[in-house]
Image (tube, rainbow, N blue to C red; front, top):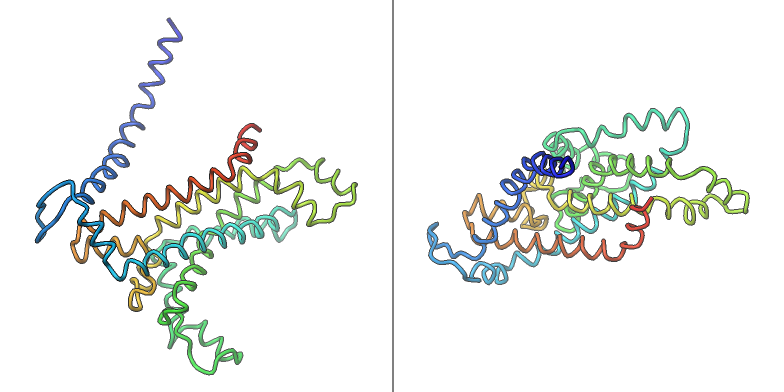
Length: 295
């Protein structure tokens, strides 16, 4: 009788969370999915169950650029964020006065408001008054100001650099904690067997932090996919849509051009893309995930 009461109490306690998920996650997702299959003419709904929005998206010449930019943004941002975070986290795991101070200071880029970060970097990368371009000119790396955000060939990679600067600190701290939790006797045993620092990292530390590494990679990918403020404030999708990604293009189509159906169709494509990438990554790392979860 007591076990039955405890079970119903548990159901009652998680009910608010279930209700919140249904209201704020599944509800809007369902609305977006239905809007993507609804035709809009002059802002009015004219029919449900049509693929006209996806056909318009496929015929949009800008959409191909958006897909390529989104791949650079998500995959490039995730890879560089995790690799840089792993390197920094490995350094922070070393006990010293410098690393102790850095563990407290490294979160500053992450805790700054998105708009403040975007505006600061936009000014620093400005082609005429930016301090970074001016520094390049002063040291002789360029004989004229560089328009980092105005060059279609550079703008996406500049955004990825700023993204990594912003997201990497939390990744580094998580991986630092994971590295510091590796049993010291395993590292010492590898050292006594003649393994150098790289071999100890490769064969002892990485297998032990594989679960954390997988988790932080998936979380970073989701964060980066959902990021909107940074690219929108810095470039607004320009120049000439050369930095347009899914999140900014969805916003532009939905809230500037009022193409609700096309914006919803793009949201569905974005969700499917993210689920496919995350699912593939989890499938590839399923063994390390299971091993880490069993510890």
